[in-house]
Length: 163
Image (cartoon, rainbow, N blue to C red; front, top):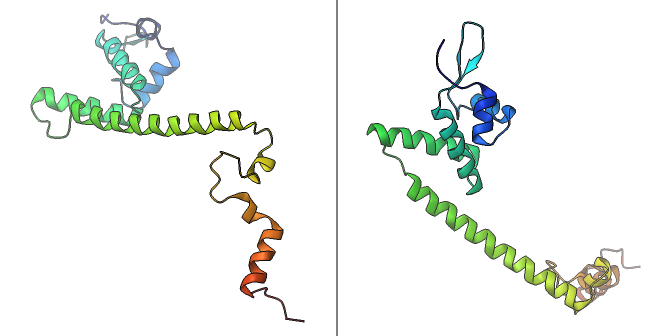
């Protein structure tokens, strides 16, 4: 019998569920398990390390597709055949993406704090208020039917027959 770890042992050691292990195997992130004569699946011990790498990369914000690419590039770099950008370049790009999201979230936090401070309790009412701090594309007063009528009357393009 070949030495190896059963799926439950691998999953427990890596801190994931057995279904996650199967999913990663289907996605090609983990090499398919060998089979015993009795049909039991056995993984090499390195599978635990691979799974820990996958989970660490996910915590850093990488998608499974990005992780698969990183693993492939890493394999090529170790064999001397790699020419694509490695972890340094990709981590830098991911960091820029995260910093952009943080800036967006800071703007959202400010808008929410301003809405709380302004006492906004009704979105529709707030949308029509000049003191509303929420980021409406256009102030809602221009969307009111009476404002629209005033605009068409001022431009003379009422669209009617003129009677």
